[in-house]
Image (cartoon, rainbow, N blue to C red; front, side, top):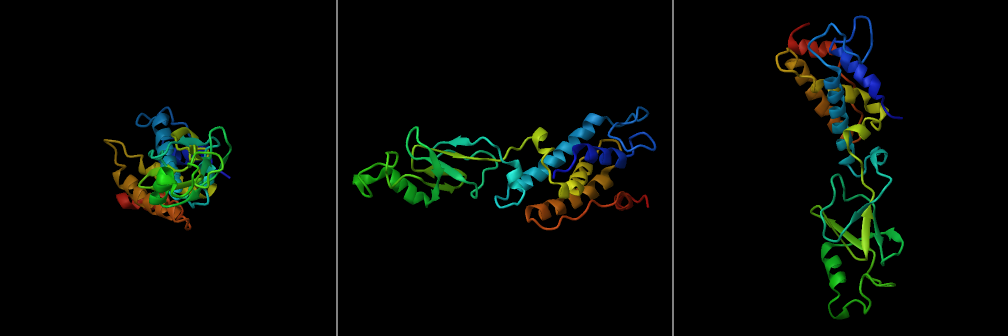
Length: 232
């Protein structure tokens, strides 16, 4: 179950004390001249993006699959991998032109280059991209680049953009999402620096927990952030 974008936005608006008195709303009160709702929306989206990138940077993260595209990304031999591609991602290889894709098997970069060159038919008389070649179907990912044997390769990769990720953040990370949005709430000329800094420090701790799939600390009460500013 995903966390709710509207709820997080309401929490941030209420915590900033800019919604109408007695309401829990994402609408900035007309009497407030210091904040606009579109800016708060961006705080929320930025925090969601941070969480999504943290999840997707770990190929073994339990929630990474939620961000995976349903459409594979085509890759060419020796090309740089797209953003957020990880060494743990599934690589599929088309053995021959117009053929079906199969799951690739990992090999070292040296082995891949050797199979592709197959000098003097060292391994087999059939080249790596020819039908029934025993040299086809292998890949290597090193230094952000992919090498493979066969006709073509593809990977299913995460989709990371501000619009998509706001509907994919796991419900258990809502507190971290709110915390992250609060850390972006600093505005020149106001007195939010101690509060946004406090939330920023907490958000970094939460991101570390998310990356390691540990229990994520809850969002700190606003009173603690206010204490950092000396209010209480």
